[in-house]
Image (cartoon, rainbow, N blue to C red; front, side, top):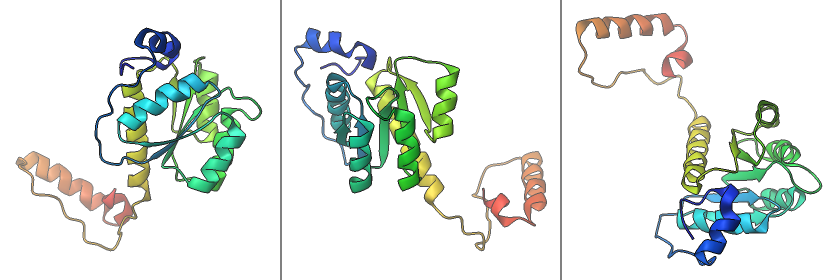
Length: 193
């Protein structure tokens, strides 16, 4: 199994490498990922790569099965194919967001296009990615959306004093920051952000 394998070329790569998994590397726990695709070979490839990257991987071959697992296990992220038997990936994302809106979702498709991207965003997906993606890039996207979701969950203390870290600034930079802060004084939430 090769890390440079793209998801679109997974069948050819598995045949070329004998479908054997590379020795897994040890990583700290990184979160629980639900991967939904009706292509079981792709589920196997993605599952191995994400496990090797330290994730716990849950899988499903339909949106309905995925919703059951999502509801019961509340993953930290979901990676969903657009075209699934029964409910499609867009319907899965909409229903899963109704259950747990804080869980970031990524959608994969062999077909790219602005319409698909727009529909994925409207459904609530954070990213729309082509299946012709390097598994390391997929891992990076997963970590990015999970990190972003965690930052969004942290409450901002609007009553705490706002202080700047000690920076090596020149007079012009200090004046610009001071002016920006004075504009935001009436709105501590804006200043905190």
